Image (cartoon, rainbow, N blue to C red):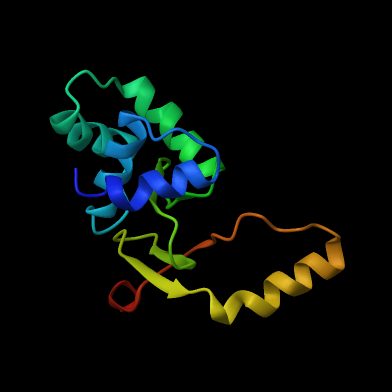
Length: 139
C-alpha cells in the first residue's frame, strides 16, 4: 500500500495506531477520486486485506471521521459517503437527476462565523449539502 508512509506518521503523531484496517481504508479513499459509501470502501479494501469485514469498515470509518482524517457526508441518497478530510467543500445536489457539484467553503465562512456568534455554538463539522434543481433539470 503506497499510502502507509503518508498516513502512518499522521496517525502516530496524534497517538493512534496505524492498523492495517486504517491503512487500507485511507489508501482506498486516497485513490477513490470522490466520495465512497462504506460498501464501496469494503469492496475495494478487501482486495488488499481479504480478512476485512464490513462491520470493521463501518467502525473504522466512524473512528477516522471522529478523528478528523475523513469527512462523512449525507448527499441525498440516504447513505453516508466518505472522503479524505482535505480541502473543505460543500455539495449542491440535484433532486431530479442526482447530479452533484462541489462548492468551495470560502463563500460560506461568513455564514459559519455568524452562526457561531448568534447561537454560541462552536461548529466542528463544516459540511453542508444543499438540494435543488440543476440547470439541465430546470428546463
